[in-house]
Length: 358
Ligand SMILES: NC(=O)c1ccc[n+]([C@@H]2O[C@H](COP(=O)([O-])OP(=O)(O)OC[C@H]3O[C@@H](n4cnc5c(N)ncnc54)[C@H](OP(=O)(O)O)[C@@H]3O)[C@@H](O)[C@H]2O)c1
Image 1 (cartoon, rainbow, N blue to C red):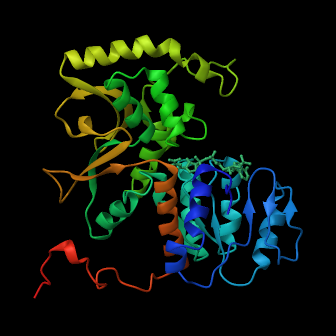
Image 2: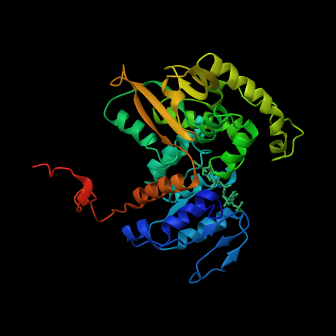
Image 3: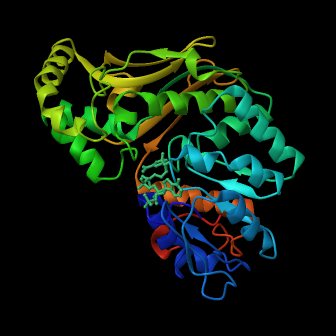
């Protein structure tokens, strides 16, 4: 597992730690290595030193492969260097589980080659949490396609950070403060500028469209960067946070203008069947995307079957706890772990007040 010291990684380790799900999944499994940027922790029983400086990926993968049994690789980083290891891992039949969007939003050829390697070497690629955290977005798209439906149009709010920030500034909180709150809640990307510039949403829309069977390059997702001055070339990483209060008046004016017209600002990801676009837009107060609680995602699909009324998936779409829960579900799927008890046939709570179906 890579990224055990990060927000999602820590939450996942908590979930795996002895109680609840780990107890449910009493499979014959163990975590054999935990890696971050500076070290790799091997278990005490390992024949290798407990701490090693990371970076030598071929050596690490070779050691990992020497462990007996099926192996799974969990990437809880947002790092391209880790993603570069995916082809080698897949070639060795090692399945990958990750909330990291980079691999699946890279060039179409890289995406296609990963899928082909996974098929060829019978390894799994599990990345449900790259879109909507633990909301069942990609699996729903796959289910639609499997049963012969096709996606015709999409309208979505795919960013927990933007959903949170816009919700808060519409209730009177200054923009810079709302961004700080989103960071504190763990909604924001490791580099929050990735959210605010729209890159994160472009990546999610690209992954979603590819999952729906469209061939699409990153450059084909058009749209405006709502924070063009966020990252001038001379700006040191992170220093832009200090400058955010200077844009508070601009955001207050934007909100006031939208409200005076009966509108609400949303950061919308859209696909009309041919073109994909990500943009900050005012939408009528009563529309589906206008009524999200801060942090909520909503994805509306118009398909062959859902032609008039879209299929909508909505709910909180960010946060380390929810994301980790989604990664855990992918982990169970990858490991073929069954929960042992079927919650549908366990004793219902007495106060549920439902009939027994007879
Ligand atoms: N937070 C959310 O709500 C959310 C939702 C959906 C998806 N995600 C995705 O989940 C992933 C993790 O997010 P996060 O918020 O947990 O990030 P984070 O807190 O920044 O954690 C990143 C982790 O990855 C490790 N790492 C980075 N580069 C590495 C490298 N080259 N080699 C080994 N380890 C490396 C970091 O190690 P160090 O401790 O050494 O820096 C850290 O443990 C990201 O891809 C993000 O896009 C997050």
